[in-house]
Every structure is written in structure tokens, then in C-alpha cells.
Image 1 (tube, rainbow, N blue to C red):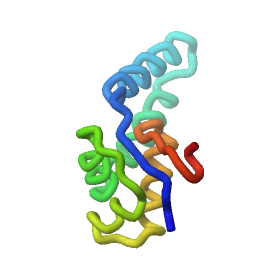
Image 2: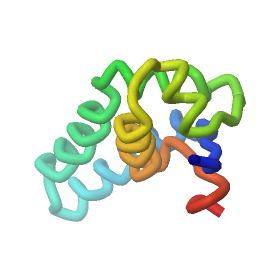
Image 3: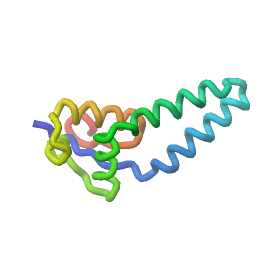
Length: 102
């Protein structure tokens, strides 16, 4: 049974600005447009999945939901739900609390 709860990080807009600013700094520091493109590609690829965008939508209103609640709402397996949550959490879009998220 999963007891970890997830909520949306309200700073998603700030996060995208930070990625953009960091990419602009990289260009100025000579790291180039390729690194900037890689960062944006990772973000957009993650957000292109309908289940991930649905998870963000579910949590964007400040709700705190468990993996099981999200899985039930999306009508997908716990394993698939966990995979999507890990991807979003690794992008710093979600915040986890509980069993492993302490």
C-alpha cells in the first residue's frame, strides 16, 4: 500500500524561467544552444504524456493525493502511476511526502 502523498510545486513557472535563464547563462559561458535545447527537450518530452499532464492538472489546485488516489483517478496501474510521478518529481515539478518522500 502506498502512503506517499504528492502535491504540485507552485513554482513551475519559476522553474521554467530558471531553466531558460540557466540556458541563457550557458550560452554566454560557451556551453551553447545544444545544452539549452537538451534541457527544454527533456521538460517538454516529460510533459507531452497525457497522464503526466493529467497528474499536474489534478495537483495544480493544491490538492495532496496518494499514488493510489492518482492511479484510481487516471485508471492506470500503480506501477505506471509511480513511474509518471517519479519523472515529474525528478523534474522538480512535484513534491513528495510520506513513506519515501519524508
